[in-house]
Length: 437
Image (tube, rainbow, N blue to C red; front, side, top):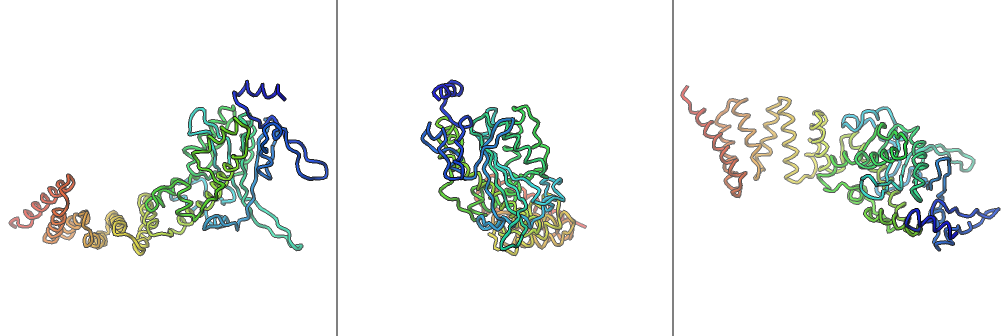
């Protein structure tokens, strides 16, 4: 044993006991497992003891530690159940540019994916844990009755040391083989490129970059950032999904150092927090996807600020009919005056772009009647009455109202510029109005 330890120390410069030390077999007939050689060496329990259900999967490429957690789809994660996602339609995302290749599939066909790494992206960064989640059929037999249904499986692949990586990548390949696509949170920028680089380093051809991929971060930002500010997954859990993690969790910034400590010491006890953290990330992606896809499919959000954000997103994409209905719905909610003006202004621009100028004028008037720090609506009304109604007195009136507002503002560069532009407009309109016929 001393020779083995010395060899490991010389090769790694650290003391770690992982994949090369196997736990002893359980006694015949069942009973508590014997302590592994690792227990004897370090005085700490191995992963197999700390994470019931964990197992070492061995193959020609080596070995990898794998843990499965199985959840009934009625499981409540925060305010939502896992089953909510199975009622959503992935096709709802197609008009929003998330990935048109997902059309025609079911969320049972997708693989949720999240990694825990040794640091931020870089040449030496390693994904030491890859978590995946997927729905699969499940048969329950009770009282002689057979019931078919679904469960959600959260599976975590863990590297007890770097030598486990080839087998982990092999296992991931097998998992992706029958999946229609990926769902991640910030995976397009981080997880997928990182894993693809690890395939390359192991002289394997990964298929991650080729798969249809829904990254939930982008739609989450479009829908929820105006109201919540931060769209980090932890912030969304607390402020959107109604989830509070237990004390078992560890903050993300600690995870690389905890793994490094494990490699140095062989003590796996603090790793349980990383497994919990990754598992919660996977479940939160499922319920977040449910929220997002339901709102995209129905154009109905749970909060009027989010409704406004959805309407603006639809307008940006040229989905004018959807955007009009969504913005009108937002205006029926309890909005602040600033958000109320934003919704009206975007609605007015939709009307203007579709040459529904009289309807746009009604919207501009609603804004102008309550705005004190912006004269955009006054200017739009002045243009409308000058060029489309040939009503120069009305155009002059709205311009003078705008000047009156600007003169009450603090004397900033913007106020000076607006004041000069408005006076120039007023002079032109007055010359035009009083020009001899």
